[in-house]
Amino acid sequence: MALTIDPQHLVEASRQLQSPANSEVERPSENQGPSFAERLSDAVAEVNDLQEHAHQLSTEYAEGRNNDLHGTVIAMEQADISLRMVATIRNRVIEAYREVMRMGA
Image (cartoon, rainbow, N blue to C red; front, side, top):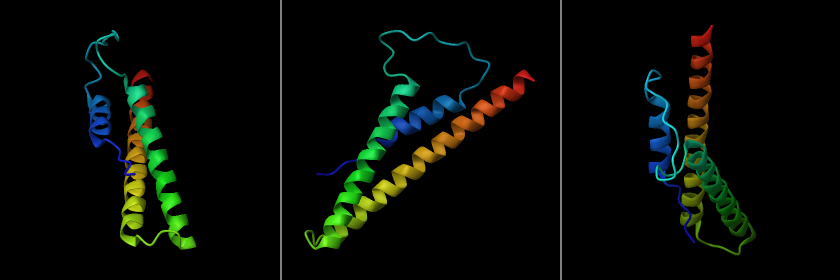
């Protein structure tokens, strides 16, 4: 069972953060697709699934029920990279929020 995070969703969400602040605000409509919040929520859920899968594989390996070291290490690295990517996006969201707050001052 291979769980993967779709990096395209995270890249698109990151690009939305980098869009110019002076553009007109678009009102969401039913045919525009998922919002940034929905994509971010989905990404966090996928990262959580990857973390749980990696933990399960490492536990099974440590207990001797799984002898696939290669697969275990790959799952752990996927989980780590995904977590770091979500943390980077979180940091960019916080940075964008602070920048917007400075504009009002």
